[in-house]
Amino acid sequence: MSVLSDKVVTVYRGEDARYAARAPFSPAQKYPEYAFADTASEANPAYEAVRSCFQIAGLDAAHFETADWNPLQDLIQPGETVLLKPNMVHQRHPRDPEGWRYVITHGSIIRAVADYVWKAVGQKGRIILADAPQTDAAFAEMVSILGLDVIRDFYSARGLTFEIIDLRQEEWTTRGDVVVARRKLSPNPYGSIPFDLGQASEFVEHRGAGHYYGADYDAGVVNRHHSGGRHEYLVAGCAIQCDVVFSLPKLKTHKKAGITASLKNLVGVNADKNWLPHHTEGAPQSGGDEHPSPDLKHRTERKLAAAVRGLSLRMPVVGPWVHRVARGVGKPVFGDTEQTVRSGNWFGNDTVWRMCLDLNKIVSYGNSDGSLRDAQPRNRKRHYLLVDGIMAGQGRGPLNPDPVATGVVLFGVHPPSVDAVCAYLMGFDPEKIPIVSRAFQCGALPLSDHRWRDVAVRSNSSAWNRRLTEISGENTFHFEPHFGWKGHIERSPAEEISLQQAVGVAEQL
Image (cartoon, rainbow, N blue to C red):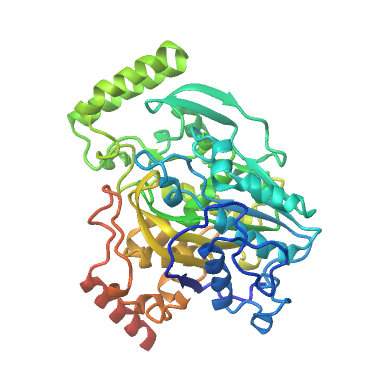
């Protein structure tokens, strides 16, 4: 059992919002508990941040600053298998060659967490680092950029098992945002497990059945898996078979979900993205959420896009060429996706949060045979979180954000609570972001037993070391939301006063 409360999230804020440059990202000093001989010649703020976060959390406090300090020993047992799940969505930022630093989880964060996981699992334990990036991402290039191959070799030379796995079934080549080639990938060694949440899905009674759009041009696939009372997902076996999931998300805004942190990060344990509903086609009045008020121009674009996507599927060579030409001609007429609301990239997306919470339910309650455990808190898989916010992303996330140098790392043992703190410290109202607020309200297969307003923060920053709702807005960041969410999720001073008053009344009752 965890020594930490589900209602407490630890936040460390450092003054140095940079990352070490050279893998394998060893610490710059020989800490008493450090199990290896080598240290780095450059500063490693991320390692210091992770270590400080565990110390502030009070983990194994009796042994801190000694060789015996093992902060994760009460959370992870010797010989266990731990899945490290970073955010590896894509290796390229469209405007900044170095923008990957605020798009994906940095290798120095991964190395620091892995060191303390090794301290807990010992020589007989196993670490699996796995993710399912965007299908057009280059996994090998990302491994190199993050220094994951160097980290793996570092551990292997010391007799420790550190696997790196691409969970996707295909890797695509795109030109002009159009798929021109598809390469089948080798099956991951732990296999894939289908789950049907049925009546436990967050899509129950949702009006989108038959109109969901997934990750590929063929929307028939996603709709076959979400119809007739079925709500099916294909999940990587390692996420179910492991003893512990340790998520390492990146702190960013997100065009379809508002923010991406712990809960959204589990999209990367799926084994086929086209089983995942991303938005619902149609107007809100008919149950859709692709656009707030589709006019004639939007409806025309939608019909043309559907025809061109179909051509890409039917004619592998000519189709993609026509698709690229059509996109080039259509962009000045219909608008650039980085500046125009379409495909559910706005605050009214009522689809993607349901899909994300469904995946969290499967990881929490799923068995290796595809069945689900009883909905009791004691039955949930251990799922720990350390959020990389040292360099965070705002605005057009998740792939095209602007950097925010916060120097922040967050740690917790309860994904909804961690995400509530992420949203609040970003300057947003957790209640207005469905992926956060609804995570505390799931009826079937619940993900939480408390409200987000009950969450408290433990921090080295005195302004944050208090109940979440007692943190003043002037002491939080003010991230710019994605343009499709702007003006709808930010906290206002009046709302903060009202919230604090409501909390005070509730405590008196």
